[in-house]
Image (cartoon, rainbow, N blue to C red):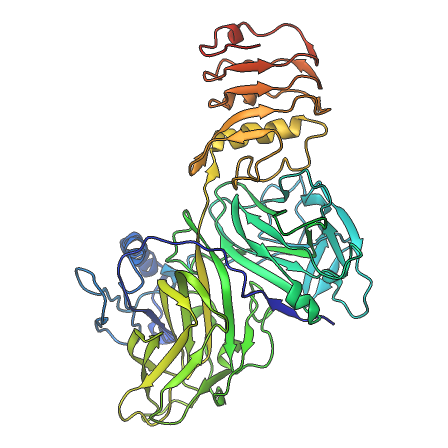
Length: 570
C-alpha cells in the first residue's frame, strides 16, 4: 500500500515585507487550573478590551509579544527592534483566541443546503462513498464539470487512491473545483496524488496547482511515485467570497500528458490557528509538520483537522512523555500525540536538529515549535534553554514544563539548510528536549478579480448551456490562466477588459448582470446561438466594440447602447 509523503521540495517563491524583528512568541500550556476558571462574563470583557489591540500589534512582527500564563512577568527579547514594551496578560482566558469551536461533518453539500458544510472530502473520479481512517469521502462529480475519470488497478491501494480525475483538454486555461464555503473563515486545503500510470506512461505529469486565483506551486510527484508513495500538498487560506476554488493547470513541463488528482480535502479551521497571519494578503503553504522522535504519521482522529504530522528521525536520543498535555491550551491546537515523543541530548550539551531536511528558498516563514518536559513534575524538574535558528536567537531562557509550551514566529527569514539549536542554561539537570514543529512558507496572494466582475462572469457562465470547460474559479487570475475568451487588467483587483467568444458554438441567454462589467472595452459574442432579449448595457461606459450578430436574439438593440460614450464599432 503506498504511503503518503508530503512534497516538501515544492515551494512557491515569494517575499513578504516585514519589520526587522528577531525573536519568538511563546505560549505555555496549563493556562488555568480548574480553581482559576474565569466566568464567561469575564472572558467576554477580556476579549472586548484586548482582542483588537492584540490582533493589530501581533501583526507588527514575530517578536513583539510574550504571553506567559504561569507567571505575571515581562520578558525582553534580544535583537528585537520595537518601541514600547512587551505586553503581558495575566490570567488571560483561552476563549480570547478560541472564540468558537466547530465539529466537521463529512456530508456532501447539495443545492438544498442553506449553509455550506464545514468540511469536504472528495474522492476524485470515484462513483461511491468510501471511508478512510474514519473520514467519509464522496464522489467529486458535484463540484467539477470537466475532466475524465480513471480507475487505478493496483492491489492494496487506499480507496481514495484507487480512482482519479484527469484533464486531457489542452485548450483549457485551468480545471477548477468550486466549493461553497463560509466567507471569511479559515480553511486547510489538501490535494492528494497517486499517478498509477493512468495514461499508459511510466512517469507522472508535472503541472501547477492554484487556489483562489493564486498559483500555489508545482505538482511533481515523480520521486514519490518511483518509491511507491502517494503525495499530498496542503495550504491554509481564507476565501474572500462564498466559494473557494482549487484548480490544476498545465505548465511548460506537462507535455502531452494530463494533470490529474486523486483526492481533495477542504476543512474549516478554528480562528485561533495561525492567527498572527494576515490572511487577506497571504496564505500559508505547508513546508513541514513534524513529530521529532516519532515512528508513525499522526492525522485524524488524533488531529481533528486531519493535519498530517510526519515523523522526523535523526541520530538524537528519543524520549517518551510521562505526563499529559491539553491540546486546547495551545492556539494551534496540536494533537496530544505529538507530545508523546521527543528528542534530547546529554546534560550540558546543545541539541542540534537539521529541520526541515531540504534547503529552503529565501523568503519568510511562519515557525511554531512545541516542547514538553517528559518527566513527572517535581521541585527539581526544571528544564531551561535558549532556542536558536541558524545561529540567530529565537527565544531566550525558555523554561519547559510538563504541561508543554510552544514558541512561534509569525515572520522569520530563512534560506538554505535550517538548523535548530537548543542550548541549555547553566546548571540544568537534564538536556534540552523538543517534541514537534510546524513551518509554513508565507505566500503572498496574487490578487483577485473585482467582486462585481466575478458576479457578472459567474452569472454568465450559469446562463450559458455549454460554457467553455475552464469557466470556473477566478475569471482573470492567475495571470496566464484566465477563462477562455477573457482578457483582464493587471493589478491586485483585476478587471475584465475583453470578452471574445466569437463562433464558440455557445447557446443560452445574456444575464442582466452583464451590465456590471463596467471596465469592459470589447464584447464579441457573434456567431453563436444566444437567444432571449439583449439586456441593458448602459453601465458599460468604457465599451468600444460590440459584436452580437449571427445569434438568435429577440427584439431590438436597447437604446442605451447607442448612447455609450466610447462605442466606435458594432
